[in-house]
Each structure stands twice: as C-alpha cells, then as structure tokens.
Length: 178
Image (cartoon, rainbow, N blue to C red; front, side):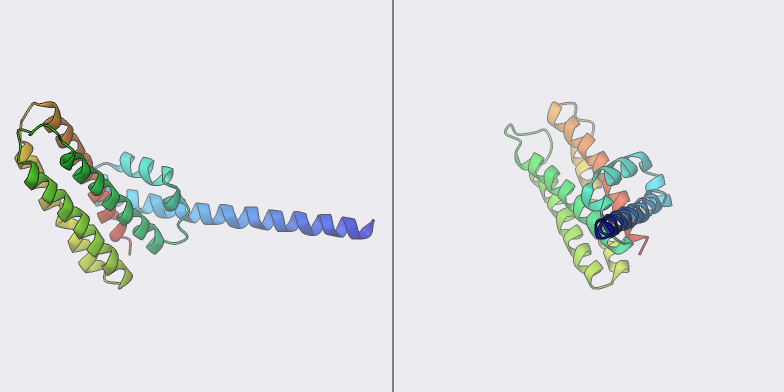
C-alpha cells in the first residue's frame, strides 16, 4: 500500500509542477502581449485590436519569450498583408482604382515583413523596425489610389487598409520591445 501511496504522491507532484510551470509561461506571455499592446505607437492606433488579436492567436499566447512573440507577431502581420494582396488580385470586375498598384503595394508590405523576419533572426531590430515602418508608405499608396471611391470594392479595400495600418502598428510595438 505504501508504494501506491508514494506513486500517487509522485504523480500528483508532477501534475502540480506541470500546471504551475504552464501557468507561469502563460503569465509571462500575457505580460509580453500587454507590453507590446501598451507601446505608445500601438496605443495611438488600436490597442484593443492588439490585445484581441494577440491573446486569441495560439502561437502568440504560447510564445515562451519576447523575441519569439515578436517573431510570431511579425509573421501574423505578414500573413494579413498576403490576404489583402489576395483580395486585390481576386477582384474580378475592374475596380475604380489602380488594381496593379494596390496589389504591388501589398506585395511590398509582405516583402518588407519577410525582410524584417530575417533581420530579427540576425539580431538587427533597428533595420527590422525600419522595414516595418516603411510599410506605412505602401498603405498610403493604396489609400491614395482608393481615395473617396464609393463602390463596394473600394470601400472594402479602404477598410482593409486602415486595419492593416493597425496591424503594422502592432508589429512596430512588438519590434520596439527587443
């Protein structure tokens, strides 16, 4: 009976340790997410979107340190830019804006974030930050192309571009943390 009591005690101890370590990692990740979303640059854009996005994104929540969280965040924003490029490319009817210029702008954002990812790997946060920041130039091109057009595709692309700027700001907040 003593060996089964010892076994139960040992198993219970292991389970408690795993629970404690798991919650500690989650708390650290939550603290890092808060740090990114409280960055003044993010705060001036959309802090709520930052918190909602990163806390609901499993790779962000499971990131074990700030550098990994930054990598995950940059990849997430790059994916968002790809989706927007896909939207522009998929427009069947010729829009009232320059479709090619808007598509190329989003592809440039994807490329900027791909470069930023490589620079983060090389511990060059300053250059990564620059690559992320110049993405705002590309969103300005899209906004200038769409302008005040009122057709459905223009309105949708303008909404997507404004949210893209919020995502870029999240990436800036992330890169500011390393």
